[in-house]
Structure formats: structure tokens, C-alpha cells
Length: 571
Image (cartoon, rainbow, N blue to C red; front, side):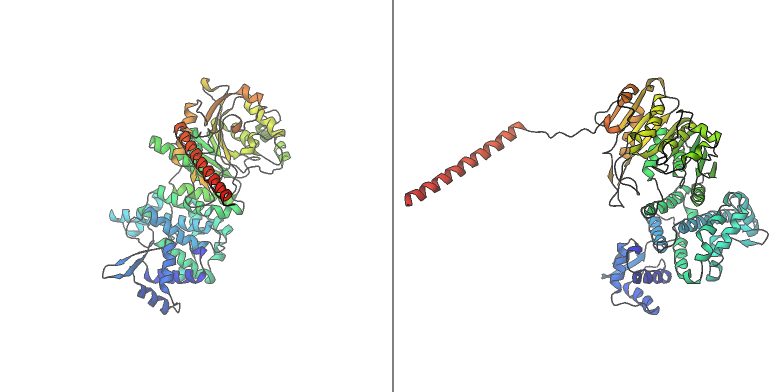
């Protein structure tokens, strides 16, 4: 990544990309371009080697002279559908410009705007091929997709029109604001423009950087990509910046954990799904994907609420880029002001051990009811709202709840223990899964997934399945200090949950009576501990080794005695 190297490399990279584009070039071509821009250096080959290490340049032998090389920038191919590798290379290149102190959400907005424009122009081309005039095609694309042609002002508002020159780039923020006013579903764009300070960012001082980012995005034609791939690109950006944002307090749930939770709930088609701690919207998107992959045609209604207004808007853009239309997103504090309806499934990774003014929950009778329905006085301590989130999600769930929490929620005492006991006694806890350590960007502590079921089947009543998946991980391919769940680990956990039976060293079905005997402690390691692999010993082999050692010792003793006797004779 260019952010990890010196600015002299980044500056020359920008110039080379702008001048050479997608053309193959030789070392002397790069030297010529740099010299023309007064950026020549003693060793251009070293510069190209650094760019190759960063995955931004490919190299092959020159067929006319095998002693030389042919270079090509990886991400600058707009004529064909980009591969996944080239898409990621492109996003990495754009990310390196953003990392210099600019909010990464600017990159999300640029991706959204470019993808929206590409899809809209593809609609325009389709109508023009059918014989419509350009203006007619604009109006039909407006009606079919989103409005990116201002009919009143007869003005195009697409990315391509706005970014075609330095003079028009200055209008980018204004164009997004106009789009937000012309499209009810995109009305939040203006808020993003204002909060991110796009008008202040897009100025003469930053124009060189902005042009470089635009060049990177212009290398991709999103109209050639399915919505899933575009949505994944959006998710990639969130994931790429997650380690950095975790240090600043933002939480991001790794996608494989989201996949695990949704698979455990086994979301059915035709149902409603709610995430009251929405974040980027990944839980809702994964629910939609799960139904699509299992049924082919998702008919879901998705609801979410997010306290941070900008993250709520980011989630909406995420849903749009995944081509998901049936959703309703609310802004506000879910614990104190839940605005969503009761849904079939409720999923969330809420803030762990969240400090909160609990007294505020007691003031509104409607809100108070949430925290007194399952436990007479279900108000948690102000230092941790983990069990408040569980009660909230249970209250708004018709069927199942899937929640990711800190492991400590399973065994902490005081008021949390009182609420935990009430929930367990009502037979609402169906399964508890202990996750491996180091899965999350903001903590190395192991999390847990708790599945709650308001309609347990007869054979599961009075029982809780404990799954110890602490050893089910692989090393993260990109972040050295992290682990991650692989597909085989997710499959193993989900199968154990569905079979609901004992698996030595991995899963155990425990009666509520036994949990009661352990003072309602749900710590997974109390009930199931990973099987220790016993070393297999070959007795015959060990006896033979012992005899060899014994023989060597006898020989050593004999030699020592002989040595001593020899000295004695000499004296």
C-alpha cells in the first residue's frame, strides 16, 4: 500500500498513472515521463519495484529483448469486465490517496456515485439502442432507475459529466446535493456531503489528489459488474479501514461472523429481519443473501436502526449497491427510542459493555415495559448494557434472536446475573457459541454468539446447547495479529447447532437444571472443553529406545572404568 512508503514514490506513481494509463511501457518510457515532469530520479527501476510489491504494477519479459521488462498498471483496464483481483487493486490504489487524513467515507461516497452513474448510463444506452433520442433515454432511465438528469435545468448529474474537467470537479458536492433532492431514496446524500465536508475537501489545494482518485475509479466500469460484486467492493472498503477505525472507536463485524449468525438463525423467505445496532448494514445484507442463495428470490422486509446518522446513511448506500429495495432504516438510540416494528428475526452485534444512563430507560412507560417483560426489574448496571440489548431484541422478535457479545456477559454477577437468570428460567436461551480469540479488530478477547428462541421445539425445551468453537479458526490472510473463521468452521458450528446433540470436546446439550446448579453461569468452558489430543505411544519403539540408551550408558561406564584403571597402572 502506498500509504506505507515515502511520499516521493506516491507523487511519481500519480504522474505515471496519469500519463501512461493502461498502455504497456518500458523502463525508459517511465524515465521520460518523470523527467518531463521534473521528477526524474537516479534509479527508476527501484521505484517500479516498489510499486510492483504493492500490487499496483505487473511485469513480464519483453518478447523483443528478454533482458528487459514490460510494465503495466494493474487497475487501468476499462474495456473488459474487471476481475476480482483488479477490482481490489483499484480500490487499494484509491485507498492510498484517501489515507492521508481524509475520512474514508469519502471513498465510499465516490464508489457509490460512480457505480450509480455507470448503471444509469447503461440504462440510457439500452434505450438509445431501442431507437429513443438521447433526451428520451435520459428520462426513461430516470423513471427506471434513479434521477441523474435534471429535466428542469436540462443538466446531466452523472459522475462522468461532473468529473470530466478541473472546472466541473469543483461542482461534485453540488451535484450530489442536487441528486439527493431529486431522489427520495437518496435524500440522505446531502447530509453526507455536509458532514464529511466535501465542499471544503474539493478545492484547488486538494485537486491533484482528487483527480488521482477520479482516475482510479474511472478505470472501472461498474455497469459490467453484478450488484453483488459492487456491494462486495463497498464492503471491502469498510473492511480495509476497519483496523484503523477500530482504534478510533468504530466497530466492524467481520463478514464471516455475520455469516455464522445468519446461518444459525436459518432466516426463512417471506419473513422480516431487524438489526437494532445497524452499523454498515452487513447483518441485513447477509440475511438477504442467505435467503437468495437458498430460495432464489428473496422476499424479505429489512429493518434497521442506527444511532450514528452518517453510518445509517452508509448502510442505506450499502443496501442500494446490493440492489436491495425492501428496507426501512431509522436513525436514533434503539435502547431508549426503538422506532422499528416487531420482526421475525432480530440480529445484532451491539456495542460491548456499553456505558449508559440506565435511569433514562425508566422514564418512558413504553420503553420501561421492554426491560420489565422478561425480568421484573431488568435494568442492567450502567457499566454494561449487554443484557439490555438481549431484552430489547427478545421484545421485538417473533421467532429468534442472534446476538454477538463479549464473553463476560455469560458469567458476570450483580444485576447482569439477575437478568441472565430470568432469561434462562424462561427457557429462551437455545445455544451459546464460544468464538476463538482475535477475530475482532478492536479487541483480542473472544466473543460469543447467543441464539435465543421464543418458540423452541419440544425436544429442545429445558435445554441449552453449548458449543466451544475456540479452536475453530485459521490465520487471517491480511492482518497478521488476527484470526478468522473459515467456511469449514462455520459449517461445523452450524451443523452442531442443527443436530443439537453432544459432540465430544466441541458441543454439549445441558439441562437448565444443571445451569441452575452452576448459579446460572453460562460460561461455555464450564460445560464443554476442547478435547486434548493425546499423544500416541508405541511401547515397542519406546522399549527399543530405552535399551539403546541403556547400552550406551553401559558402554560409557565401561570406557570410564577402563580410563581410571589405566591411570591407576601408570601411578
